[in-house]
Image (tube, helix red, strand yellow):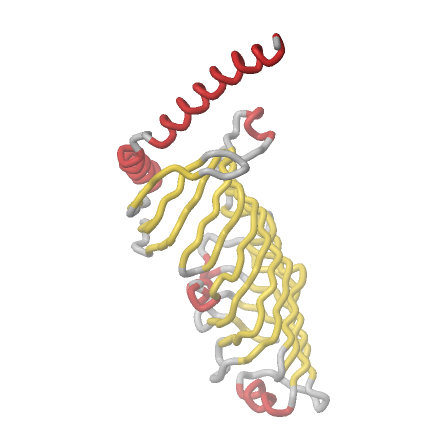
Length: 278
């Protein structure tokens, strides 16, 4: 009886404390918080933030916030739209080093991102991308004339360094097509997989990139050197191609020397703005 009495005495305050936290959580002034976040983000980064709603989010990993109808307008004028954004404190040892970590799940027309933002200095992000629409990515901004269709999954570990983005990425894309500079038709692919390193002496190092499709197969390695601006970045890429007869005339019209067996080995040099074949 004494034990059950202590259980009752302990359970009643615990229940009251839990209910108090619950009502604070539900009754929090989320509208004012949304206005505050938008103002702070604009002041610190020049990014304009708008959202339709902001409210509480409950999950097994802990409480957080959920926003819907999110629009980010970048300083360049480009907009990123999200159907839903859920954030909560991440379970991470970085908190003990004074670097807050936030777990975020972002979903929108582009696809889904699931990962952890760590606010250590300039910031870092580690996580996954799921079913990202290649057609929505600004590939032509990186390389004029480059475009793609299909869906891609990726794992990334990125951080902002002194010279820009640093880290690594591994990805797989399925059932799509590529539009390559100087080739007038889209090249279909069944699968593209790659491993990339960013930062250091190179803007981008291609550790491996393999394309497999009905018309050609290709492997790419090499790097894009650091430069004061992206357009003048020097290319040093080795491309090995194994093509089917139907696409060889198009490849040759773009300046590629294709052997009788359909294979070619070439160096892509020059710059991003003005690439050359060797």
